[in-house]
Amino acid sequence: MKTGLSVLLRKTIRFLLRVFFVFPIDPQLVLIDSMWGKGVSDNAKYYLQWAREYGDNGLRYVWGVKDPAGQEPIPGVTFVKYRSLRWFRVHAVAKVILYSHHLYNYMPMRAGQYHILMWHAGGAYKRIGSSVAGNSPKDVRLHQARNQIVNDPGVIFLSSSEIFTRYNIQEVYGFRGRIENTGMPRNDLFFDPERVRVADGKVRKQLGIRVNACVMLYAPTFRMAALKTGGSTETLDFNRLLESLQEKDPVILYRCHYYEKSELEQNQRIIDVSDYPDMQELLCCANLLVTDYSSCIWDYSFLGRPCFLFVPDLEDYKNREQGFFTPIESWPGEICRDMEALCGAVKTKAPACFAEKAERHHREAGSYEEGKACEKLGRLIQELTERK
Image (cartoon, rainbow, N blue to C red):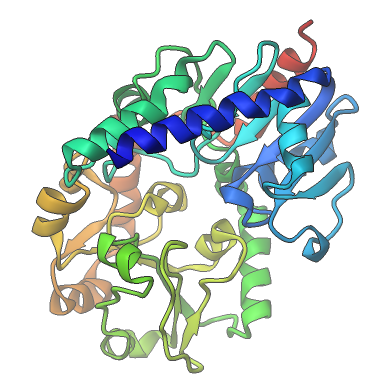
């Protein structure tokens, strides 16, 4: 019953929002809808950096954020409050809309507009949406209802790899429209050693980390239990991990998933970076990454550095919570089922083996990443904004 009411409510809102269609589409206007208004980050941030350097033919950008007044000015970008009346109006008149997430099923689709789904994850690891292992029949029906608008002729997906296209786009969304094999704009960073070095230095300076310190980033994905309680499901023993890295002058950065709330007690060696605005910069700073089922392993793999999958709940997560698109054994990281295995691996595993495994993973996944995603996206936006 609730599923039916939810779908009906969204259809009603979608109908009412068509009132904004009285305004004509602006052929030079691009709306950025990134991470539900969280701020300037992710793929759109890196695309705009490229566009400012190489030119974008006079396009105007509007970025929807929860706190417009708190944003640093960006040339050519106007900030509007996320989900304000002005935001809804821009949604109705922008020629191109860039998303880092799924489409809103309460927003009407308009002929002559183009919706580019850049997504916020690469590879194909944990299951999402209608394919989640723990879904009830009601969950599946709700996801399927939400996905009905995705095959609109104006929708375009960007893809990071063949497996992303196969599982995340075609299986989850049943999408049969236009897919551009660009890679992810935010990952262009990792193909430029100088930009990686600058990002590393920026993070260390801002967080007060010594130049020669060994930085380990711990960035787990969310658990359904955390979504229900609003807290954290953290199980890693930070102090024990520090002891295993003593000889390397270690610092651990902890970044919880944005669905969760960090409860970490900080000190000089353990720093909470959950509010740091740019995950890519943190990855550039990290000498080692510890995660679990998070897609950040895809991004980090292009640095060729050591990556460890701390997965004490592996069987439960695989069979009852999310489930996997691809076998975890094929992922570019060392599987560690408990703290003893993790501490042993970070001390003994040679960095070279991780680079080799990452390269093999890219081949098997059919990676489209080559450091030119922003350029390809720029050409696509130019093509779309020039259409009558």
